[in-house]
Amino acid sequence: MRQSWWKILAIALLIYTLTAGLLMDVPRLPILNETIRALHFHVTMWFGMILMLMVSVYYSIKYLRSNDLNHDDMAIEFTNAAILFGVLGIVTGMLWAKFTWGDYWSGDPKQNASAIGLLMYFAYLILRNSLTDMQQRARIGAIYNIFAFAAFIPLIFVLPRLTDSLHPGNGGNPGFNAYDLDSKLRMVFYPAIIGWTLLGAWIATVRVRMRRVERTLEDKMINS
Amino acid sequence: MAQEKIPVTESDYSNNSVEMADQLRADGKIYVLVGIIGIIFAGITVYLISTERKISKLEKSVSTK
Image (cartoon, rainbow over all chains, first blue to last red; front, side, top):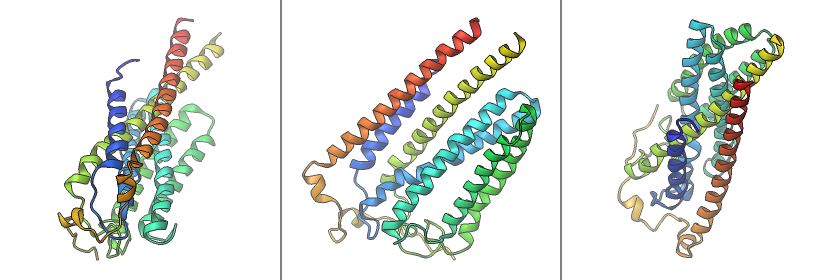
């Protein structure tokens, strides 16, 4: 395995997350009770998603500057992994919300905004698949990807803060939002973000390599 | 408007008024959960590594053809 140190780091951080996340002392807060531990699993999905989308945008820009399809491979596969994390984030969020806010979907601004954000990225996949020419698909995909990211950030970080939301740091409702993250939670939360993100990056790079093998084989078939 | 943040204090760790899974922990059954989730994670990790190995082989065979 080439350059596998960060994969070992990912495994180590995730083993730490799974054990410490379940075993360490957490604040005893009303409504949340033990579900506060979902912080290390649900919230980290979104952090991982955004970090991977940033990588994807970086490679989309690199593609536009170079027209090198290898950069496009990175962009699409990091977006794929990010979408996986986003879907897991929204589904785990619904489950968590059922037991803390009382309903799977409360039409909370951040819930709605993240659903819209996911739909934008589904549209990205459909857009790409509707184009057959590889360079054209990569170029239009890259431009769409950059604009989608530019819309996604205000959707989930800015707009929910301008109104009442059930989510932390957004509005004035019971649940998690009023509490500041304390240092004991951070000791698991930050490693968890890095661990999950690295796992996503690992999955993405495996699929990038698959894509490249596929393309090499196709090129050989055409040239032979 | 966004409300002021309330810091988590020492009493949030020591109070007995909020119900937590204390009995489950006292019985040691939490370790059953940690074990189960750990095994599943290990299984998925091994599967990912073996997939990666297969791709490495494919990469080699493609480049030497």
